[in-house]
Image 1 (cartoon, rainbow, N blue to C red):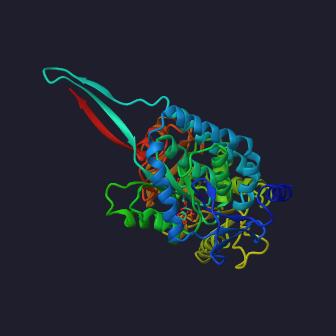
Image 2: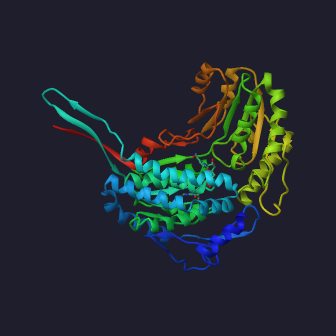
Image 3: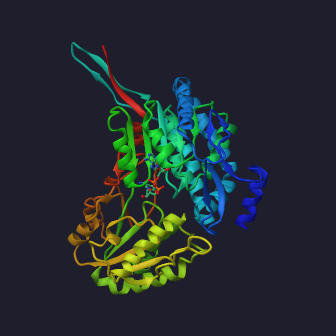
Length: 490
Ligand code: NAD
């Protein structure tokens, strides 16, 4: 079973107590101050799982210093050399992928099946950017006439980056930043979430085994207000790629606003709509809507948490959906707990609010105030929630979805866009002109038509409105990690 296998890994690979320590200059550092640890918990049991180094400002500065010293030589490596390094990292990760999946599952609470998918995607991140840089193209023009010039675009790596990630897809989201950072010739200091740090710690060992030169990628652990904040404010950090909550993103923007040349990429929260029109195959729509709502217990920024269904099929959809969720999303089997005690209380507070506002619970319930044996919350389907309720407007980021009817296409678009966020959306219809007509009006950086969570790493990823600044993926990641100059050569 998972725990037993993980225990084996622990005994074989990490000694008897699991302490997560900083990885700076290709070495794991000792934490000499015994009180400076953060305990993290196994979400399935509520028991302490690991101790995380709570980095002080001096630790962060050491890591930034290491990355700064490594930058001149790493930025001058050839694309082929960097591609080879990324492919080497990918193969070591590939060899160890089951270990990574088991730890991700235990640490975050996600099912092992889900963790395996994410580790495969982490490997793909390295492979994608390794090959992207070998095939990159830039604009070249010949200006003719008496002042004839060869005009071309040239890019150079920005410098040291802060790479900060959240707890919901720990390894996948961190490597989504680390891989392009390395590929485009930058060096970095990565800081994973203090809630889920284990796979980032193991990744340091992969870098060591891949013989990544010292200082090129450093990984520090600790809390956001301490280590994270010191990192983004450092004047030696020339760019920040951040994924996390909207309020943290705003804070980071404020903290860096005066440093005008600092590159900033912010991937923030969502409150994503799922629109279901009356021409769909009901069974397929039910299954897709359930997956988009409850994958990883609803803790994916791209999950659809507001379902809008055409009134002609609403009365049939709702019971079918509730029954499907009840049968197929079972705690401990196909769905894990939420990540932490704190998050449990947050999700619970929205369920209490829904109860106070007389919402109808088709599945799920308000869980006990104190969690027992882990942070389990049943998948919850709500109806009868008003559009101005905080349940409908704010990101809950848990296994909670609202279902509401709409009458016209225009109303569906208005409801979808009636939110400060604009990250992702799902549109279900078989009418091809509606796919484009509606799809092109939804205020979201990602619109999935009759599908969900499909990713093509060369295309732009990111949100509109309060869901972020900038995009990542393919050429968009290149824009984040490089400076662009245009040369006119006479
Ligand atoms: P969070 O904002 O609390 O933390 C994210 C990271 O930022 C952590 O590593 C944290 O330590 C760090 N941090 C916190 N305060 C900081 C500060 N002042 N300066 C620098 N770093 C700081 O988010 P979370 O609770 O870990 O993750 C959940 C959120 O992430 C949700 O809102 C979710 O929608 C969002 N998310 C967005 C995407 C996306 O691609 N848009 C993907 C996944 C998750």
